[in-house]
Length: 323
Image (cartoon, rainbow, N blue to C red; front, side):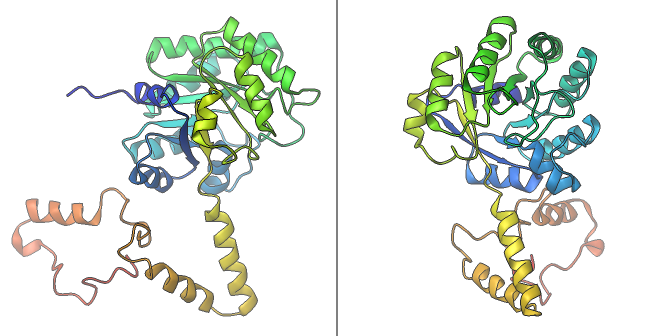
């Protein structure tokens, strides 16, 4: 059976008949959760990866090699295609951009988006965003496209424009930039960053040829898939792992304020009450590869009997509280 390349699989998600909800987070376990839940692709957030994996803010602090190494760990943890934030292409020259594309392809990633911000970039939705000139943005994208066509024609290149949130920008500038990139480059899709209203999204998608999407924290979950499909929204990245910050912080502050560990015990009791339901995931080890069951199977297959561990006669048999 032919194996679909990551890029082809991601293109199918972008070009499906309906808007695809795209789980958007940072860690391998997040990608594994998305796959286990039945989603067709996963997106690695640059900002969330910086915060969660490296303890850095989304300011362009991390290098290409750090970001790609992280993306590779995510991509190899799942079978679904992984789409990644590639900031501005990690460098001032077309050579840097082409290396960026090659490195992400080598990492097993399905596609990336490259933004038109001036370096050092700013996090989407923040103040202080400035754009490079039209000519520099076009050159950046064309360099990426040339590398795509050289190394893997299925690899997805998305042009992200921050024209809306940049100083002096707005919806008109975002649309102008998108139309320009469509006309002057062979990128695959357009990503409008930072819109505040659904009306802005409708206008931008209507005025821009091709398969595209818009994002902005105030847009997520505000329209149904049917409504998004009707205006041509290709995907809707959704940062489902945000509770992993807010709920953990709530637990930490409750423990500190009480001076006890009892809030954790209360949470554990609530978690264990969901055993044998669709929400039962233990401590997350059920997704980690290789699974503990895989290790046992290999031991029984390849180790002589006298070297095998005893998995049956233990006080931990059947205990999933600390799995």
